[in-house]
Length: 397
Image 1 (spheres, rainbow, N blue to C red):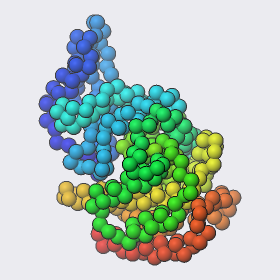
Image 2: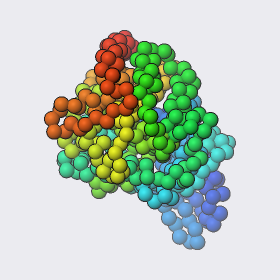
Image 3: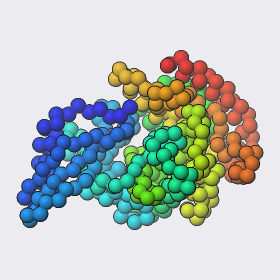
Image 4: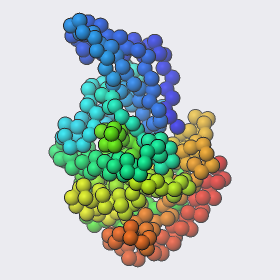
């Protein structure tokens, strides 16, 4: 459900023009055409800002993006645009990963009704959220798809190479001793804040995560919403990594697990065939390992953690939509194939790398966390939960 914020267009133009004047004291004239909203998005308001600026007798047209902090329709517990701005600026300045240039941060909510930031608009194409069936990836051939898919994974690995000193402000030591411990506690807090209704699938998944917690839990930068639909591509190359609301120090594998879950959701989860050129779970992990220069750790756990997070976020978004009097297909779209079981149902299937075993040459050895050898019974239990969750979803339609 896209953000829909009621604004007085005239007041918006007046306020942003005045604000830009304060930021550009050397400008002789600033003309701001009506702002347009970016397509998609469900957590923050994103507007395109294309001012014409005359300075020293020379007029130029800028192409910027204005990102406004969520207020009413608040999917995330802490949608701070200040944190987003700081982490994006830090990663951009590190020079490893492709990000837009960050221009200004405004923390005063009186200007537009909420804090916001302005960044450069990057030319290129953003894949459709359901990239296996629509938009950029569906419109090109397998070789181009593979080039973009690999470039996206390379960009994600570059994010993970960011020096921790640059993003130390993301640390929340009161929540745990490592970045991953802090992330786990943060999502426990989110579950309570979001008032997600109790359901066995979530309770059992959370218990599974506790029972299989990786022994080694390193701290590292995590983008948060790691998926192809949050990237901009040009000439088959990722040129920008977007949407940092859930950035943390949870570590690279939390991003990789989220990526694997989301790729499952837009293929098997919604009954869509995988496009040639976009690697499956094992191929994605192998590509990331090649770019990162190290093996991925405890991926069964991290894929389950990604699935769990997506499930509770989805429950929050569905509840918000219902409270606003709207409807939101569980699959996120309008066609019958989009109306798949809720993301929580994915928890029952077990991690993709376990499912892929025996799938021929593409199968990879599973790196198991402590206790995974005894988890066959747990997967059977989760299969039972899947049936219950699917029944619940059908009853909600």
